[in-house]
Amino acid sequence: MYREATSILDPSLPPPTHEAPLPRTFFEKEVTTDIRYDLTLIISSGSWKFTKTESSVTTPVVYIPVTRPPPSTLGRQIANEQRTPPPGPGLDPDGWSQLSPVTIHGFYRPRRESLDVEYTIYLASPLSYSRGTVLPCCIAITCQDVEALDVLSKPTFSTRKTSPFNSIRPRCQRRVKKLHNWQ
Image 1 (cartoon, rainbow, N blue to C red):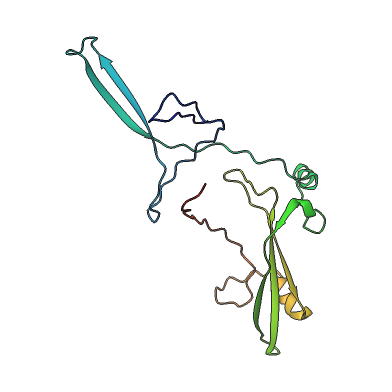
Image 2 (cartoon, one colour; image 1 turned 45 degrees about the horizontal axis):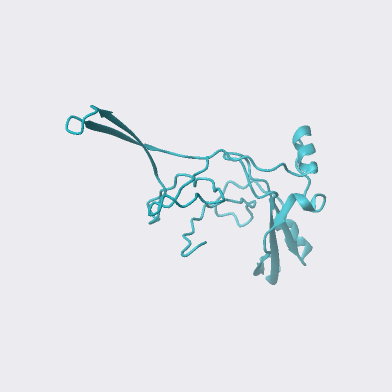
């Protein structure tokens, strides 16, 4: 769906030369900006100026556009068809977008030695996903201490929340950013 408008102040001006998709409906309690759409039906009866009556009914409309991401890489398409895990960043570098690495400094318990562990997150490319689908991600862990790396990267199935060696559980968080003076 596209919008087209002329100047309200001067309707003789031509419409803009480019089209832009309508933004989706957006409203949240913590954000001071929102985008809402209303549908209004105006009913007019009578043709004379003095006998003409108008009634209107308005209802809110939630607009959520259907988005289709561009096709993924050939390696990921083959993995989807064969129902196998997608190839990692080493085998399919074009299929992944690398985020900035994060280094965490700490101590490894058995030896009480200082330890630096680097985590790098990769998200599936292209960075556009259909609503409600899985967001493929890959986490690379690098460390100089092989024993510590083995402990940190091995999936564990501890049911205790206090266990220091739980598996990595990535979580996505939505962040809304209000831009001022954007063009």
